Length: 222
Ligand code: GAR
Image 1 (cartoon, helix red, strand yellow):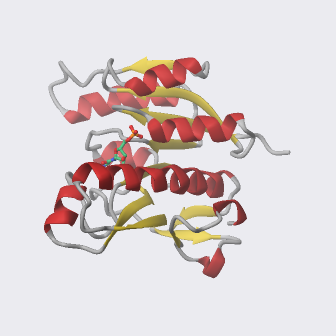
Image 2: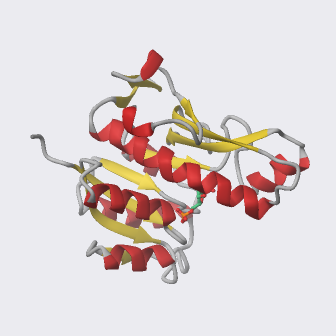
């Protein structure tokens, strides 16, 4: 058996995606070892989740920093203490500098609440509703300097129904996020998805390209 993949998770808020990774690790479904959870906000509920799981937590507030470069340099120094093979952005609501992204190239992933390349940026649920889209979802992708533009590992889609609100869409998308993120992390931990020359190279993944899952997909079979 190879060593589990060392992971650092960065959060800013609730940490429900973090929880799915903790659950997957504890249940033996994910060959990962979450070494630390870092938040830029002291009041992030995800810190409680990490503590409850016995995972070391760190708060590095962005307040008081003159610019992103200095914050990101300190963030990288903190993350590097744990020698992660993978840095997981799980609702970490900060734009990262190109230097930070380059430092973790190929081992930095994010989950975004839209079917990228549609709806980069914030307030995705509101914008999807305003445009009358019939479909919405989330994307897990490797991070590149351009915001929400990195190569996609997996997407999950949900239908948009006439009575949906931003909150109902948030709930529906999060249910799928909690399936898509562990799947992508498992593939990376198993060496089945990696960043190669700006593209995701898949092994033993259906069709060898980013799949789009939905509520009916048996992710354990993937
Ligand atoms: C998730 O819905 C994720 O898609 C979003 O933050 C939420 C974090 O939830 N990320 C972004 O919008 C990044 N641009 P969580 O704290 O419960 O995991």
